[in-house]
Image (cartoon, rainbow, N blue to C red; front, top):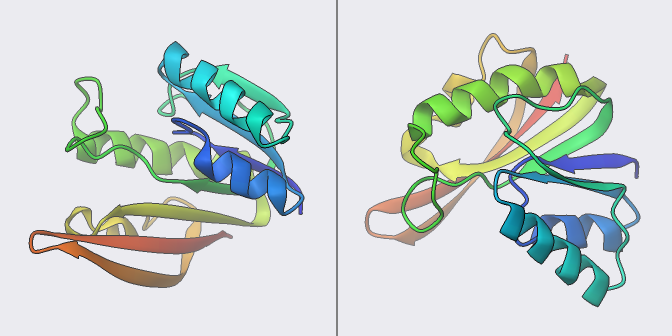
Length: 149
């Protein structure tokens, strides 16, 4: 396990999971309140992050990571703070390849209707696999795994 970034860290659930398996988690979120919530949650579970940063995932900090795992907002319950959902995902995917070392992995959960695999074409990633998770009648989540080429 190495350094893992969650650029939409929210309350820190993925960061906690990453820390428990031995990764060095780094979290980024646009909301200062969510970053503070992540800090409290990580402390509660005894996970020490490398960094928790208030920032915009469309303009990612330039550091090298071994993996990126995230569950970005898609505007139903979690707010996109006025950003168009598709634009948010495209901007994130465009910058994510620059953060990952060659051979590093990106795992992103998204509504299937967004077609995240198609969005990632031409961004420096090879699609490895996807898993579909039906949530309810109008929502199926896709957990897509990519490798940095």
